[in-house]
Amino acid sequence: MKKVILLGLICITLCCQCSNYNVIRVENEAQFVASEEYNEKKLSLLRNHIGTADDFDVSGYIESECVFDIDVSNVSGVSELSDFKIGPDGDIFITTHEAIYRFSKDGHFKTKLSGEGRGYDECVTLENMAINDKNNTILVLDGLNKVLIFDYNTNKVLNSIELDWKGKALRSDAIIPDKRDGGFYIFSAKLITSEIDINPYCIHKFDKRGKKIAEGLLCEDFVLDISPVSQGCENKYYINPVGSENCIWEIDNGRINIAKYIDFEGRNLKNKLPYKDNLNMINFYNMLLSDSYKYVANVKDTRDHISFAYVGNNAEPYLCIASKKSDDKIILSAPNKTSFTNKIIYSDEEYFYFFHNKKTMNGIESSACPITKYLISKYGLIEGGASPKIVGLKFKID
Image (cartoon, rainbow, N blue to C red; front, side, top):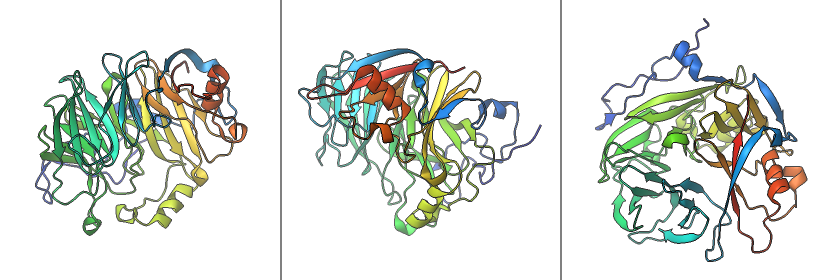
């Protein structure tokens, strides 16, 4: 068996000489040698294509659909969303950059959670939210290092926590609930400028009072903070690759594990961009434009499929949806190779969910991805005062 070694990953022990915090154990972070277990987690992207094209017709691979009509007649600012969740009772949560809106499962507006501001229950920079269905709380993350805790049933604020980074972190990018103890994990890979020569940890564990108690997942090369954490089915949380090794991570019972390794088979990014060069935008853009596949992001999965976005030569965006059973896959792109206008915003055991709010046909033929074209052909344009739709698509790819 050919051995595949993931270079640049450093073994993390239970404590670190340069930190006052415990270090979260990262499974297989030492040099990782191919094994049967590894091969089960490996997805070879350039094999078993059912279809890959900007004009690919996805309709033949959709088994069923579900639709939520979101009534925004009494709500402003929901034309664009940054995060989307479905609660354990079926309620819908839509996060914009200004507020979080809660709707019933039939799409009727119920209440507004948090808003933009500097008040006790407000956020200066609303990043994302998470639901802890074990203790019935909603966690809302302010990018300027604050966490709001809401009661799921009453929508009342239980706590407003200022995160104590000891002056090390610039901002917080995503939040993951820890159902074991009511605490949470924060993804952040941006240090203050004076610390830029120090490779940071990306995952930071806080207790329910906001005290940092552990950290893990060392970052050695480039990190993008665009949707760095994704929620999959069965309430799993996936962490995008924190560098060029293309490992998708997950947190399970306090440990960070490899969930999937994406193998671009000779088209992987060859040269790393050192972490300290992240602030050099010229180097960063040259990396994005290079003739390789990189930046695996927005990882979602259902019971039978996994999906993720990535970019190729000249930063061309792609969406991959692959079968977990056979590794058969479809890879979608936009005709103009520069924009991917519809992304998967959420997934559960059966469906990948898309936000459909397209109001005009302007530019559709030249820029829209196959998913957008399918949604327009099936549900039409969202015209006048019509409400946007959340459309769930169940794929059958094998």
